Picture 1: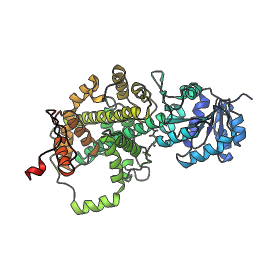
Picture 2 (picture 1 turned 90 degrees about the horizontal axis):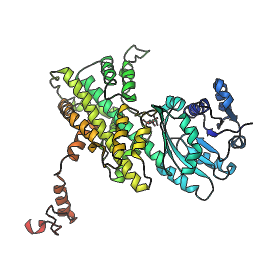
Picture 3 (picture 1 turned 135 degrees about the vertical axis):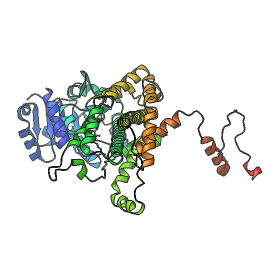
Picture 4 (picture 1 turned 180 degrees about the vertical axis):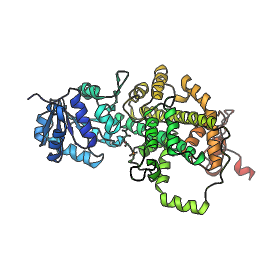
Length: 473
Ligand code: 6PG
C-alpha cells in the first residue's frame, strides 16, 4: 500500500478537521486515536476522502504507514498529555522522524521538548495553528518552529492546507524550537486585545447610546465594509444579530457576561513583562476577562456604589458613531504595535530572527485576527523590517494622526459616563506616553534615589548621580 505523507494523532474536533483538510488537498494521511472506535467513526464520516486516509488501530501500524522521515502531528490537549503521547510514540520512531505539537502549547514547554530530543536522532516541531474548527478544515494560518530540515519535510503538505491570501499561503517557518508557538501566543494576545476593544465599543453603544443588539450589529456590519474590515468585526455583526431560539431575545442578551480563557492571552502578557515590553492593551484585555469572571462581586459592588450618574448623550450621534469607528482603529494600532514589539524583543532574546513582514503576511487569512489591516502591516514591515515600533511607520503614523482625536473623545465620553474601557483607554495612554519626549519618570528616578540611593542620570550629562536629599531635609 502507498505510504502516507504525514500522520496525525488525536481525532478530536481540531484533529479531525485538520486530517480532512490534509486528505482533501491530495495528501495521503495516516490517523490514530487513543480510542480505536473514534478512528472507525472518523473514517465512516470522511466520505469520498476516506480513500486518502489510512485509519490505524495500533501505534505500530500507524508508524509503519507513514513515509520516513515521518512527520506526525499530535493534536491533543496541551500539557502533560503531549509528553505522554510523545513517550508512547518514541520507541517506535526512527532517525529524523518529526513529532509535531499542533496544540496551543506554552512555548517554554516546546523549547524543553525540543531540547529533550537533542541527541536522540528525533526532532520536534512546535506548530501554532489558528482559525478554529473552520480554519482547520478549510485553511488555517500556520506558524512553524523547528529545524529548517524538518520544515522542508512538511512544507509541501502544510502549504497545500494553509489558508491563502490572494493565492499566497498563510504558513511559514519562523525559526527554531519555540518560535512558532511563541508567535501563536502573541497572535492570541492580540486576539484578546482586539476582542476586548470591540466589546468595550459594544458597551458604549449598548449602555451609553442605549442601542439594541440588532442596531449595534448593523453598525458593526457597516464598519466591516470600511477600514475595520476583519473576521472579528464580521462575526461580531453576526453574533449581535442572532436570536435565542429559547426566548426570542437577542442571543447576546441572554449570555452571562463572564469571559473564559485558556491561558494564551495571559502567557502573552507574562512574556511581554518578562521581555520588558509595554503591552498594556493585551494586559488590559486579560485583566478585563479576569474582572468579568467576578460576576457575583460585580453585582454586589453595583448595589453598594450604584452606577455613575448618566451624562448627556453626544449631540451628534452619527459623528459619535464615526468617532467610535476611528477610536477602534486607533486602539487596534496600539495593540498590534505592542504585539509586534513583544515579538521583536523575543526574537533577540531567544535567537530566532523572527521575520515580522512574514508574520503579518501569514496572519492575513485563516487566523482569528485576519484582516485587511494585516495587509497594511505587511506592507509597512516589508518597507521597513527593522522599525522599532509599528506606530512610527509612515502608514501607521498617518492612521494614528487621523484617528487619535476620535479615540480621545471616546475615552473622555466613556470616562465621564462611567463606562469601562480598560483597553481603549490604555491605547490612548500608550500613544500619549510614547509621543511625549519629556515624560515624568524624572520624578520616579528622584524618589528611587531618595529612598534607595538608586542613582539617576542628569539631562546635562554631568557625572553626578545622586540628589542632595540628606543635606536638605
Ligand atoms: C485561534 C484561537 C484558538 C482558540 C483560543 C481561544 O487562533 O484559532 O486563538 O487558538 O480559540 O485558544 O482562547 P481562549 O479560550 O483563551 O479565549
